[in-house]
Amino acid sequence: MSAPRLGSGKLVIATHNAGKLKEIQALLAPYGMECLSAGALGLPEPDETGTTFIENALLKAHAAAKAAQLPALADDSGLCVDALGGAPGVYTADWAEADVFEGGPGRDWYMAMGKVEGKIAQQGPETPRNCHFSCVLAIAWPDGAQAVYEGRAHGSLTWPPRGTLGFGYDPVFVPVGDTRTFAELDPAEKHAISHRADAFAKLVADQFS
Image (cartoon, rainbow, N blue to C red; front, top):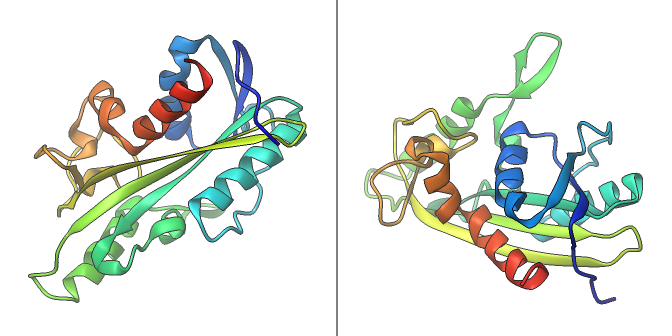
């Protein structure tokens, strides 16, 4: 089934992650879309049972589109470290799972960054630190149509973490061509070069041009 095109109107952003929602809203702002978050609509988060970024993004997009009866955009993204065989990859968020909040589990990103650093350190000081962030954006419509766009940002890992402007693994990721981490970049600078921006450029070219 060929996918229709987005016009101005309502679009569900299928995420409960405030940082991710803010980035997506900023990237879509010029195109007249009214973005509604899955969290604000009270939509449940489906289990991410896919083994690839594409599978998980489509799973979330279709679940939100069906529940809200509106077009829905889902993002699945993660850090892929060459020396770790592409890990944490689709399990990027799982590496941060910890019982850090009273009353239930939460995510401890400093712990997650430490896990990555620890596994690299185990391989010795000469271990290459090349990595990339991958982002898949999936749009789903209530009738089952879909479209998928993938972007990447290449870089290397640093330690210890630096910066307070990003989220997730941003404080240890230094993009190619810069000496600052994603968490040290002004949000506008990050939006211009991020994996999400790369995927969005492909989405915009297909959906709005």
